[in-house]
Length: 483
Image (cartoon, rainbow, N blue to C red; front, side, top):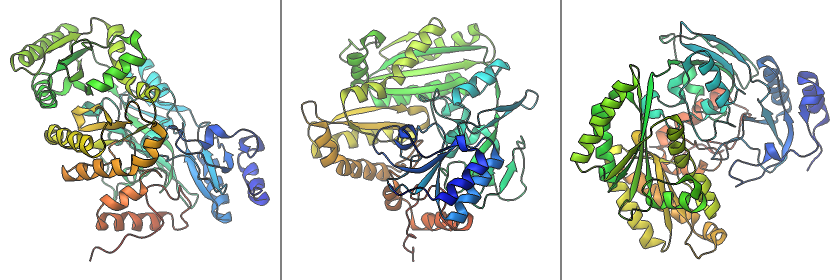
């Protein structure tokens, strides 16, 4: 590794304090991505304490021509927050910026710094008697800045929307080292272009999010969780329609899980006791949640009416309703253990896709048959957020094969087959995990030249030095002309 640039390192130490400029020792926690797919090498790791220090770091790096990789909890699933292997990129860790700046109960908002762990944001809202509904498997590690930078989804998008819908304002440091204070907690503000939405989902390539004003909600009076055995994906979609009809806005979660995904959980975590796994004719499980603002009796009455209608329509073969919060948590834990069980089974090819809900059954049937024909022996781990059309359509290596060799030899081909099918059915190859560095070429292939041209123009306008997270989302080259 080349020696760090002495003048830059000294400037950074003056900006944030010498103790928070790391150039030696084990920096592996900052340099390896969450899935352990890639390991990079940082020029330095800098840990500012506030937006002014972030701005000072950006100005130092701009003067030296050094690229910056913003990082929160480093939980990106698309290699969006770790440095490359050149040793010339600086990691800007926001984990020291973890304060809850304030909660406005009358306005139903809270303002937090970007380094706040999502679980702590949820807890702060709960302590105020309110709800911050963003929820995902990595919530004990991921940070709100990263959630917004990647426009994270999770299990309650069906009711509350992605991270974008949960944010009213941002504080952002620009590529020029200026601070934009857009933290007003307004639900209506039509004063020009929507800069907030421009930075959300940009994965740190346009500006560095340092704080956010978030929407809060009243806590539900009751929550009911059920697990249903369904005979097909078509029946799962039909059940979703009935749930909308009977529960309305109270439907907060609707997850679908293929049988092989649940068999992996049963195999590697037998203590979790997956419902109906011993019934051989159950190809899918559905986990659904109803939140009610009135009372538990009201919620249970509506839930029972839904289940009665579902059984009559043949959508459900069997079902169990959680009797208490502990049982509900257990059911959700089974769902959230699928990625862990898949990792225990061995290396696999992950896909984070979205397809219009009405077309999901046809997509699944088409793509499963395609993969079985083209790559014999593959095992499909199909699960995800059916309520918002997002599937994690993952591909496990053949049971008796060499998983490393399978990934090396088949990943590109499998991705092409899956992404071509996604495009054919009007979907997206990236639903909630972002593009990062992992899918840059995929974006260039499947996004339109007009859209790519607009994206490059925005990047050039806001970050002409290509200082912020270069090589993520967009490649270095301009897209070809659409004419």
